[in-house]
Image (cartoon, rainbow, N blue to C red):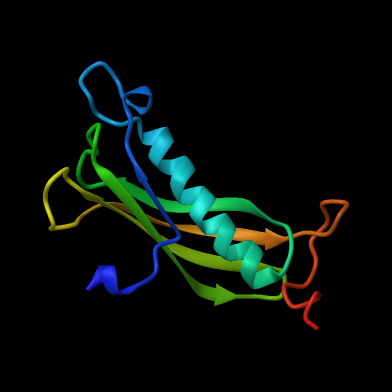
Length: 126
């Protein structure tokens, strides 16, 4: 079950994040997912990592104002300088227990040094 994993991010969707119909903007959700993947990438690479690609994002369900949004991010692959991170976003309606998957995507991050140049993911290992 999804809730057995630790979430990367959990927030409540607010009115400022929605259109006039109360649906949350896709860009807001994409930003949360990118942020979650970035946290995981930075932790794995032990330093700065940047988004270089996003693959296959499809919105399955809308997110409404007041929904609790939980984002999970898991590393699928680690290369020399890059990481592929699978990200899922789930919503839980206010006053309900059942989570509903709203979208998923794969993000590719590259570990970079202080000058923004690619570096080995494991280059900062102690």
